[in-house]
Image 1 (cartoon, one colour):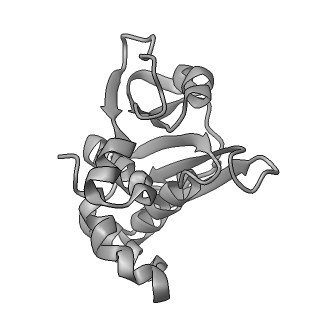
Image 2 (cartoon, rainbow, N blue to C red):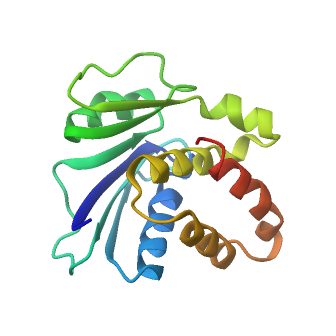
Length: 175
């Protein structure tokens, strides 16, 4: 694997930072070095939110990235702003429930995920980020599904633990 660089972008409330945190923690469980670098606007919900995650077999010197192996975009402004960040041959994952245009580049793999429609089918519109996280993990093999499940069980306790089965179902939806 050596080093894999990821970028997640969307609006506050879409679970963008949570996806990044979960990949970071899962990488740690697999004894990989990882960094998580969040950035968000001052709004509580609806403002911008993005983060970088770097996962490597060796120590990560800097969490900042200028190009990514994979970019997750959850809304149209994020597609417009961050599509250029995907390195040639990289992967762009689009939330097509919120993005009504296609990626412009032809030198990358584009994975379209209709998050809202899948979440409604599964019975809870708040699990969209878990659907996208599953698509990302399968597209990149950055961490194992088992590690994500372990992270989920550690992070989601108390009241939130009731959603773990549904979250894992959402995570596993995209094959």
